[in-house]
Length: 449
Image: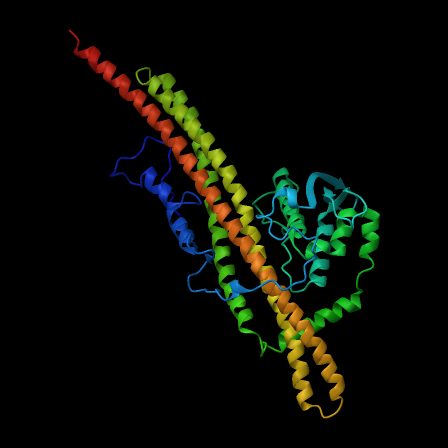
């Protein structure tokens, strides 16, 4: 991928090999490569006149889905429905994940994180708690939330393993990235109108290590979990759900498109970051080279030192830009994980629907035990209705959060890019202006008798 629009040497003239700084500023929110940036701009069409983010494909229309009205029962005391609307003074549950600590045993090496909770809720015995949790504890909480709320959208956790060659496990960078992701995971749960009142979530925040370990052992046994797995496999073998409501078919189609586009954006962003890092590493070498060069060229020594100074400033600006871009990458990747979670939620809803369909079919062929089947069908119909209502309400909420996160993230990246180019452009313009003044002084001195 050819990089364009770099601000390293003096600005290119109109007939140069690459676009000028102004055209490059207009071209990209993400970074330095024109092709991927234009592709990303097409993928993320932000329409100010529409409240919806035309995500990811103009062919995907979910206008009807956006009209869903929340139907999940919400506690009156829940005031964390939309984190971007509620001010800090309205929240009643504050969670911080910090202070990572390494533990080395004869069997394993692992990291624990301090989880500090402050709350004014009456169901908590104290207003402040401090516990230490390892990654496995977060995995346990996520599984319990999925078990209790199969058709709610549970926030994603960072992956257990990382791509080889990207960053070393247990490095400071890896630990800090995971800490931020775990912090976001817990706060997304705290901001959720239903998940925030889950009993396992409360235990996770308040129980000491031995209490949490004891509570984990009270979960369903192996046979029970195997039974759930067998039922899920049987449901998938039955094939497509016959009576799936149209809105959930639209959701499924939307998520298939979303998954393709967000994965593409994630790859583009990582590729741009890698190219930016390589460019930064190369640029660091140029300032010392020009400084050494100035020592052997007395006539142009001042100009060479000025170029070295400009390169050094641009190098520092690039480093700040990379730091800003590194904050953008986890947001995109979080929604890659969200796409997998949502596809799983839709499958679980279909499994519940499939159970109902199979019972209805069985009743049509049964001449006896019709009363028993009718009772089971009534219960399954209630279960399907609850699942549908829960998913509809959570879908609206998730989509609104997604749009907010995407707009904020890409806006921040664009603003950082503007600052970067303005800073580098001003640096070189100042240098060129000083060279022009020196040139006029020399010409005047030569013209004098």
